[in-house]
Image 1 (cartoon, rainbow, N blue to C red):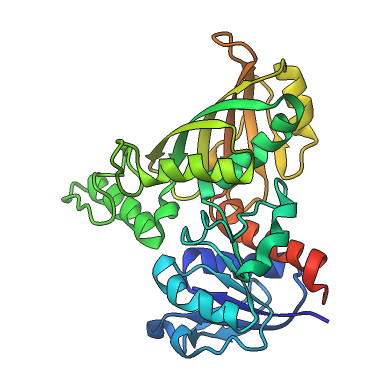
Image 2: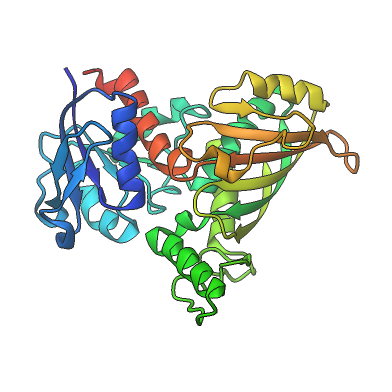
Length: 341
C-alpha cells in the first residue's frame, strides 16, 4: 500500500528537490503526479534518480479528488487558488509558501521540533512548511530550549541565492561571469549587485524598518517553538548558490555551558555537530549541499550576558529549509493519521 501524491510546482527548484527526496527516502507511493503552471504542461521530469519520467500536468485542470497528499512548491499566488481546492477535495496540502504559516487554523510544523502540532491539520486540511531560515534555526534551538529555556535569540543570516529561486542563482552566475570578463553587470532579481557583494535586504520592507523575511523568522519561531521567546533578526543575501548560514546568539533563563550544549546537540534529532575548534573544524554552506542535516559549529559561551551562547548553523535551504521538511511532514502525517504505507 502507498499514497497517491501530487507535487505542485514540480518544475521549480524546490519541486524538483521534493521529487528527489521522495525517491531517496523511499516514500510509500502508489501513484505520483507532477503538476505545474500551464507553460510546463507536457514537459517531462525525472522522479529522482529512479529513471522514471513524469509528464507534467496543468495545475488549472488538475483534479485532486482521490489523491492523499499534495506537496505545494508553487508560491503564494497559485497556492491561494489551488490549495483550498485540493483541501476541499480531501487531499491534505503541505504548503511551502508563506501563505498559511501564521493562520491559527493551520499547523506550522518542523517534525523534529513540534510534531504534535500536526494533529490540528483537519481544521483546513492544510499544513504549513516554515521559512527556510526559520526551519534550520529551530532544529538547533529546540534541544537547547528543552534543556535551559531560551529567553532571547539574536540571529544574523547569510542566505544563498537559491532562496530567491532559479532567477536568483542565474543572476549570481551571470554577474560573476560579467565581472570576470569586464562586461556590464545587470541587476534584475536583486536590488543591488549580488556577485562579490552582500545585500542586507530579503523580501519587502515593513513600517518599522525590518524586512518581511526578518519578521517571518520572529513570528514563525514563536509559533513553532515558544511564543515567549524574544527574537530579533537581520537577514542578508550572500553570493552563495545553495546553503543558508546563521550566526545565532542565545540567552537562556538557566545556566548552560558550551560543553553541555555540545553534548545536547550531538544527540539531537536532525542536528550534526561539527565543532573541532581548529582550522577547518566547522561547516560552511558548500559542504552542506545535498545533505539532510542542520549542521552546528562554533558553539561557545557569550561572556557579555548571563547564560549566553553563540553558535554557527548551516543547512541546505532547498532540503531542510523546504523540500525535506515537507516530505518529513508527509511521513509524520502518514504515521500519525493516514496510515496507508
